[in-house]
Structure formats: structure tokens, C-alpha cells
Image (cartoon, rainbow over all chains, first blue to last red; front, side, top):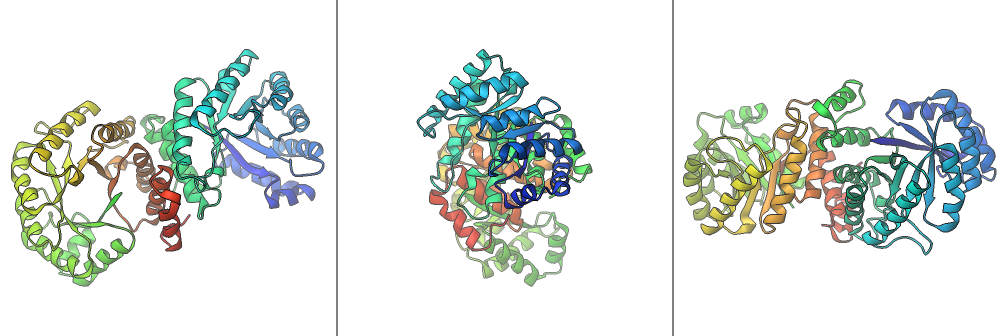
Length: 264
Length: 264
């Protein structure tokens, strides 16, 4: 199970402000707290700023001053991803590649050069996938293309591109079924997702996000981009791993309870 | 989705005391609150008391004074079940029958006489089932026996008898797989479970119970015996139904949020 901490993201107003004001202490504290809460990798995103290149490098530098985990360079811009990866002190992660031709051609060499893990969106030219089969078709292009290019299956994190439940009440089932089929077809490859799209437009979104997390674990999703400071979420994640048979003797669960990380 | 409120149970000390002291106000308040929180049926259990027959009838009477939902007579004693059913003002539920010969022979006529719904434990003479296949074998005896006896499939609630995750870390998967297969094999029959066995012996049990609830909904479980006053649980249940495609336009979820029943 891989937890990517999502909080240092410039689409969040507090982060965008802290970045503009070079509020290093605030951002470093957020990095530290996410790792303490269980994040294995920290996502950093400066994509909304006018000087993204400079900011992503600054974020990479200050985050790595205070935590030892890898960082995930989150940007649609290959230039920003290249700039961020160049500052990684240990192999990082790229968020994200897709099967869109331009993005593929720009991102792939960077992933190869830096030996990075990669979030691979199940999207190709022509727009968002509609059906489960659309996603499986794009996933096949991504997995075969990436492995042919020398990326280890274990470094690939397929993102099935989850659509909001509020738009169509079958989108939850669609996401879960896609996850199950991807893990069945590519047992060596991971399936990852953010937890905000599913609840977009609905009230009390965190409740939907948490339930979706639990169901996703049951279907084989093994990586999440989430807010590790949401203790109810992290508690349910520990319980979900145990229920899915991924936690021998429930030792990780019990250890997390003792550390105060799991609470009812 | 059927929610059976579990709180009026004499194995809980507060209830046992309230029963001995004939604390009608306390018990009626608990009945009212469970229904307000979303229970469709209220379980009543007087099985730990020395005068079970008298107490189950008293409970049935006072509960039905204040709520309009059916009651579920919860006892291993056919005599107590008969006494409770005799007081039901509308068709009730029996918790429970099993494929054990003596229990089967004593409970079946009562279910037939009163047209009651029934919790059917996947257990037969010889003890607790071990494997998924054991449970499926007993389920087949129960479903075929009950339907031959004139019980409607829609009135049957199979309980797969879930064992504690703390005993074996595969018991979560076993419970989920059993649920999935039972619903696949008997789409007209329901699958029900209490939510306490799974977490027995583990810390922060409610976290395990809540995650198990969410996963169970994904596998097709459609009835739960639970504490409806656990708002985190009920919130996750509403979200789970929506994610499982059981809530068109998410209207039930949104309505529950507006009623203050769902909170992050």
C-alpha cells in the first residue's frame, strides 16, 4: 500500500499563498505532519503559479530538507516535471503521464532518465474514457508502452480516472469494476487514485471519499493520493488492509492503534 | 437495505438493568432514537434474564407503544420467540433459525404461523462452519428448506456467521467472499450480519466494524444488525449505498445529509 500525501498543492489557496510568500516554515510543517501521519511519498504541485519552474524546485528543496521520503512531481508541464526531478535526492514519482501522444512523448524520457515511479492516467487523445472497456484499452497501451520502454511494472501506477458519482450513480461501480479488472489483468502493476473526484458536487464529501477508499481497497486498489491528516480516513485505511487480508495477524493495524494513528 | 437496530439487547448491561427495573422511559427512548436514526426494524432480546418470556413480551409491548416499525424477536429459545411473536402488532422478524435439527423444527412452525421474516444462520449440527464452501452448503439447506416450507425468498436473511479477524487475518476475505457468492447464487434472498464478531479482540473495534460494513455493501450484503446511533457508521452506510449504485441520483444520500444524519 502506497500513500501519497496530497496537501502541498498549489490549487489549495493556503498553499498558493504560502508559496508566494515563501513561507518555508508552514510548508515544511505540512510536509513533516503528512509523513508522521503515514504518507510514504509527498506530492508537490506548483502548477497554478506563474513561475512554476522556480516554485517546484523551491518546494522540492525545502520539503527534502525536513523529510526523508521521495517526492512526487505533480504537473501537466514536462518542463516543470524535469525541473522537479532534477532536484530529487532519491528516485521520485511523476504525476502524471497518459497515452495522449504529446504528453507521452514529453514525459517518457524524463521517467526513464530519473528512474521515477509514474502515475499513468487512463486517458488518450480524444478525451476522457467513457466505459470500463475504454479504460482497459488505454491501460493496455500504457502498460505495454511503459514496460517496453524499460519502466518496471512495479513502478507503474495506473489511475483509472474516476468520475463524479453525483453525475451518474453508476460511476462508483464503474470505478470499482475498473480497479478489480486492472489488478486482475496486471497483478504486478499498481492502481492509484485521488479521492476527490468521486465526491465532486456532493455534500459531506469526506464521507463519500472514505467509503470509496474502503471499497477500493477491497477491489485491489493499492495506492492513494490523499490527505493523510484525515484521521478517520487513515483509520479506515488501516482497517481495510486488515479486512482485505493484507495485514498478517493485524499487526500493522494494532501498531497504528498503539501509535495513536487509528481512532474510532 | 434493511437496518435492524441492535441496542435493546439484554447482553448489554444498561439494558439488562433497565429491564429488571422496568425502566420503560429509558427503553422507549432508545427505541425512538434508533428509528429516528434510520432503523427499519428493532431487535429486542431478553435472553439473559431469568424470566425471559415475561420480559420479551413486556419489551415488545412497550417498544410498539412508541414506534411503528416491526420488531425482531431475538432469542435461541423457541418459547420466547413464540411469546414475542404473539405480541407483534405487524409481521415481525425472528432472530434466528439455523439448519441445526432441533432449532429448525422448533422455529420453522413459528415463522410460518406469523409470516415472519427470518435471520437464517449458516450453521448446522456439528458446529460452526469453517470454509466458504461449508457456509454455501448450509445456506443451500436453509434456502431450499425455507422456501419449500412456504417462506418467501424475500423474507429470508442469510447470516454467513462471520468470525473474528483477530483470530485469522483471512476471515475478512472469507466473510466478503461468502457474501458475494450467496448474493450471486440467491439474488432474491438477503444477506445479513451483525457487525461485532468481525472485530472481536481487536482495539478500536468500531473502525473495523465500519470498514467491514462498507466492504460488505460492495459485496452485496443488504441487511445489517447494528447500532444506528453510531453516526459515522450510518454516514458510511449512506455513502456505500450510493457508491454501490443503489441510490439513484444520490437522492437518499443527499436527503440524509439534509436531515443531519450524515456527517463527516
